[in-house]
Image 1 (cartoon, rainbow, N blue to C red):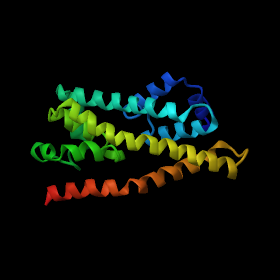
Image 2: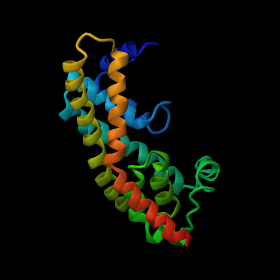
Image 3: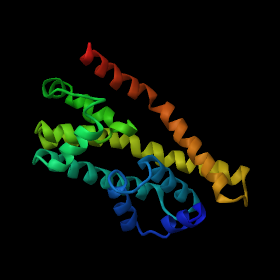
Image 4: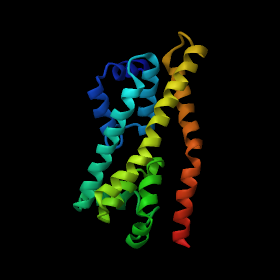
Length: 203
């Protein structure tokens, strides 16, 4: 399926459909969550969606998604424990004692790290951190993360229209990819802080 067809299908979604995609973006959709949000921002630039309606809908979808991981982990989900041990434990082995003392940082900063986004809600649930505490710091991170990505997609749409007017959408996706790179550097300082905390733990 061509990129244009994919974007057309996304553009045909109702706001309820956008909520469902946001809910699944971190768990089921086989593309990085960032790409999905950039695509939504792009669509807002085409006038197919209102970005100020998109923002709360996407935030809600991601909050529900993270809450599901938190609640399943809190209840001792064997599947999530397997996922953690299989994909994360070897590279990021977090003791319960260390994780508990740094849980706020883990919840907040992991939301900006593509490969570690699962860690925040999983560890919060595993350690049985109060749901209100998890919800607060996860929300604060998402409140920065979502508008940044959506507006980045919107911004690059306007540039795409000026530079590649009537050019195939695949070329436009190159700019979306570039936008993801820009986002990476935008959050680089957050990643640096998170990794420094991890290094201190391993000393």
